[in-house]
Length: 429
Ligand SMILES: [Zn+2]
Image (cartoon, rainbow, N blue to C red; front, top):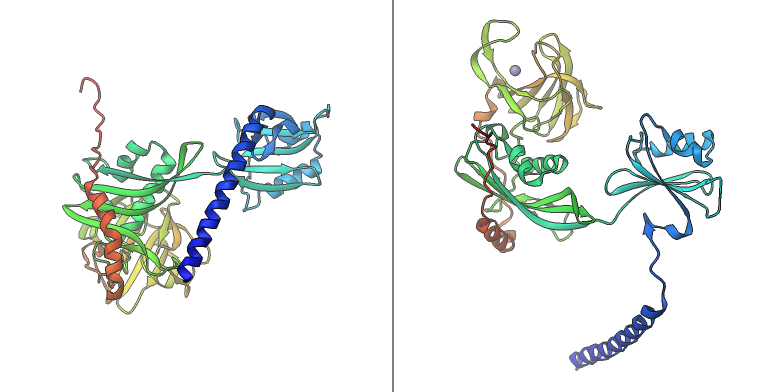
């Protein structure tokens, strides 16, 4: 009985919606013959309603150069510049070569600006509204998100960034992708020790505007073959609200581990842990009870695990350094920092991956690097040789759903061929 009511309701609804469609089709036909061409809309403004002036920022211009010729007082220019510099808008400088749009009232021979549009990048733009005092806001063009796959291999004298760059061909997107991939596998793979023959495949979201890709939206699954071992990572939410979201492997174990493999974004190990090495500054043989990661000056340094800062200080040997106690067993230390991240001081609790300072060369150091030191039960150890406890598997009750979810994704990843690395060969070589 109830089923019938629902069903007849649907039939009535369908009948009505068919009728609606017919009406609108008729309307379209009438409009085709009567309406003038559609108005030109740019950045949300109907350009036909304004006097439009297109201008370009020249060398050493400030906002005064932009607005003064269009009737804005210095007082209002200062307000506009101050509002644009706000962190929510983030427009502190105008760049030479950037185009901007001035909209004035039609027939206004003085061309007093009503609105100005300044594109911050390919997607975001800033609107200056001078119609009533000064109002500044940031807007973004609508963008599309497309799911894509990328794959590659590591060859001799290459790395993840080179392999990604060959395909993405955009330095910003390559950087974003490298960070996402390294982020997912940060607990599993030592990106300072990739080997020729290592391979990867990634399913990701590409953001584009007007058909042009401009950013990586995120990655949803990935595979990395490292020294013959295969690692899978699938993004999965443990609850329906999507708050308990994380990356899990093919067995349902979370990728996150107690310690990150390294305290900086992958660059280069300049000196490994050893019982004996020739000290480059002191010019004598001594033990090196740490791992040196060379990285550009100012590179953020991460806490490799949750813990409490027990020192954020300076000595002539260590330079600026931070020491973190993670639990009763493990303590880590980070040396030669150019400076500490804001708020980092003794007694502060830090989370895994939190920026605690920046790479520098303070203390006994020849070049910018972070010397990472690791204690286990009070004894300095080589963290890269340490086997850390793996994470807890997800609850048994959740496992069947998870396995069902990843099965087609894994099949898709497995069937995808790996794009070979193209080695540049110089002519005549
Ligand atoms: Zn060192």
